[in-house]
Length: 80
Length: 399
Image (cartoon, rainbow over all chains, first blue to last red; front, side):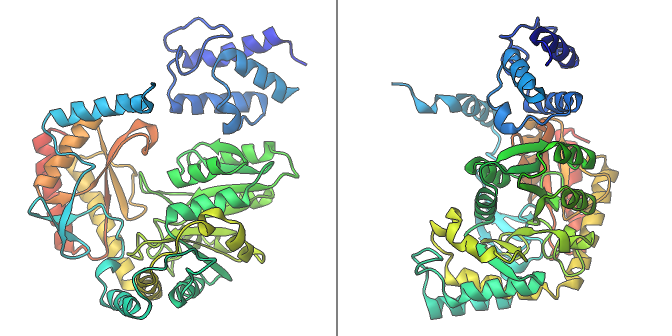
């Protein structure tokens, strides 16, 4: 199993191209609020994460993921 | 007390700012008189209708109107009840027979609207533990059907065959899967690569539902839609359609060859817990569906109209939703909501009605002027439409 901080770093890399304003990323960074992502950006980013880890993040799950920390935990669970 | 309406403040403010500029409200148009499928009186002005989805012009068909009037006399004004109780009259059964003939399928179930057909079928057949895989640009009724049910929802990029396949392969092999596609996507008027997508869905053990609302009566040799045109209709498990477009009335339906299909009449809540459509609407619809089976000449003229308008608008310098005309919908892309609303109003002053479409209904945050053609638009009207677009476009500074 991947270590949590390792997963955080991996996701940070995936977020980088979508982080236009260079917001500093912590577990508490929110996608809608801090990163100001619209639904299109979210879709592109989710597809990127899904393809990188060969997983599916359902829209039901996406509704529960508001910040980076929640995403890290969700992807850890899905790749476990 | 927290005002529950405060969540609408941003939209209220956006509308206020837009209307303050003196623009006519694009979402509050009244047709004072409707003269034909293609002409109405709006604000006292004779207006060409280019945004009604009345693709085959059946709203004023003599036989369609006569059938409705007869049913009024024979069955009364309304049903006052559910299809499963007192709301199934002879015309309801007859329109379902007409649909089975039209699609050459074993089962047909009529809902009160197309919206309810999607809501009911999707939420009922995909349950807890099942997966719905849908195109991200799906219609609101599909999303609402997903939200109403208990299935897991997986979206893929619009019309992306590879994205669909990847997601299907990642899902548990044994799980129930429903792939939901549309024949024509109504915002840009583009067509789905159904043949490939249906094949991939079947290879991965999924059932397939295709919404053919915007293709019925027009696309395919028998007007059955894009799945017929692309030769994959036999592999589609469920086709959803509507009476409020080519058929020219109101109502929605699902047709299928699934041997257990009829059980849905008892378990599908948007079918059970609502009143059945009036018998006049059912009789008009049955007549219209049967006439659409023989609409080959009208279909050919509609294609001509679509091609002429598409080429004409492109030559004028407008940016369009598709490179080639793929359906009877032609979407003109506006630079922003404000100029889109100005252009919409300029066209209305020219005597031309189109749909103003904006987010969240549109993909990629676009503002669109959506034109839907009718088989009853004459070639002269189409030239007239192009002239009006040119004058309005220049007045607003879009071309």
